[in-house]
Length: 338
Ligand code: KG4
Ligand code: ZN
Image 1 (spheres, rainbow, N blue to C red):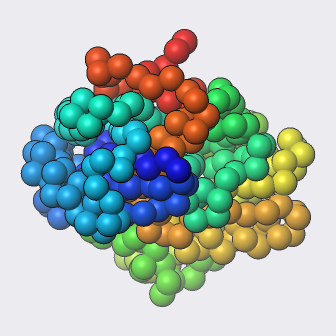
Image 2 (image 1 turned 180 degrees about the horizontal axis):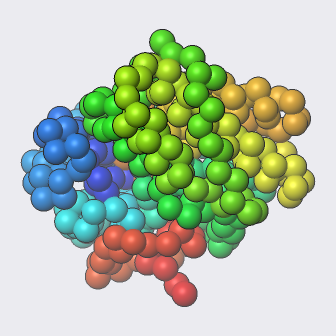
């Protein structure tokens, strides 16, 4: 049985998780979100300082939560990118120190592979071939996955401009709603009519996405003056989830794939979950979405990737591991071998 400690510090959440034999065993999460709220977005130096303060307490808490001790740990996994450079560095430095002190292998992990692996903590191993829709604050991608630990990741399509979560965050600002925008917009949207405003659905070719036109359409609508915030929020949300689910299901159908996994912060969105379930059921596609708590950034998802790499016998990385703030998603493990 492999016990892996995972550390995630790419943005504003300090996540530490312990995974034992592919199952969550203990976790701790600290967030500097409130310190960024008044700036309307994450301030990297504030995030990095908060990680420094929270890291060791979170590791202690995760151990206490699991009933395990450092001597039980077989490997350490850490997010090496993408993310904020100074924030990533705090996690990587801590992970190296633990790996050295406990004499266990260290695995650098791609943050987005962590989002995908989060689903395995709840629903077990992924089928050998599946389509993944990753919708986070910084990324929106449709992927064709084989063995997540061993095989290269095939990008079917990515966003050409804003990520889905970024669009939620920007529209929240336009509507005077707090950061982070996704939860705020979806809360307000509950009171609105999703069909009140016919916002554009950009459908660039293939499986690519584009959300900046939609964001501009919302801005123009708000400028024209008095609006129902609830109707704008609901109509905007409907436009985003309509495009996301339509393309994701088409990708499954076109590639003859029977499983769609939807992950990343925006996968916590209730309307996205509902529409994805509806459309997958109609298309005969199995839908896997981790519960909302596992959709947003956490340490267990990084430990889950570490567990897969360890079990697959993938080589560990050296203590010279450095962060890669704009790492493309080519494989689950970092550093990339291209
Ligand atoms: O994956 P994540 O926690 O961090 C990144 O890796 O970016 O995703 C954060 C993003 C933010 O843009 C946030 O507004 C969005 O996920 N988000 C949501 C919801 N909860 C978080 N978007 C829509 N609806 C939600 N309920
Ligand atoms: Zn994330």
